Image 1 (cartoon, rainbow over the protein chains, first blue to last red):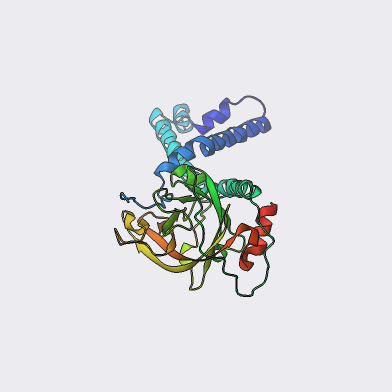
Image 2: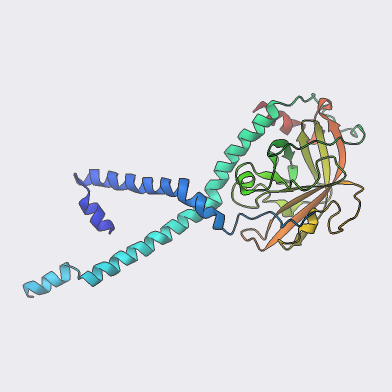
Length: 55
Length: 250
């Protein structure tokens, strides 16, 4: 898959390396800004409140 | 070696290619999972610290505070503490907790939803009492991730003070004890913890967070009692005078 993507990128080698790095950076940004905040609600580390009974 | 044998070695079969692609997907998922752990445990702290510093300085901008005497002489008695009314969903105070770090200044906001705890740190359980009121003023914050505000909640020692600055002035609480309970034990938030129906005679502060760190199996509860109070124009207590000054200049 990754080999195929790299082969498919246009241009000389140095250009393809830069494009590949930019693609990786884009994916990481996408993950950090949208995917991880959503995933975070299922994370086992973020609960610190206590169950409230009717006071 | 025949020509077809060379071809077979250099050009993978459909099965091999599928298997290779599947392996790549697994490796990718593994890396994404590691990235998520890094994001959650590390990056959210950076994000939250920035947001909370911002909220703190916005809140203290609007406050008037006297110079304080800066002396270590016995503090003057300003009588019973007034109640700070807590408006819905608003930041109403700043906590200074020397045991959590000499620069610990974090805002406290009404509500304990994830929107509050993830972004502005400490949240006040709206069903519980207000600062200065007889009963239990209870707050929650994350033990880790999103600023890990209460990371050191298990480190309190006898005599430790917890300071709360509001529009009205400075409330000084003294740590009393800490207990570990199940997440369902909401009775720690009662006006008198564990005693339904009992009439409160003191003003308490209850801090809750998760325990042990990196799990949500139990909750750690730290109790403190209101010890004294200073009106805003009398200035901050000597122990946090420098920190308050620094926070208000930011």
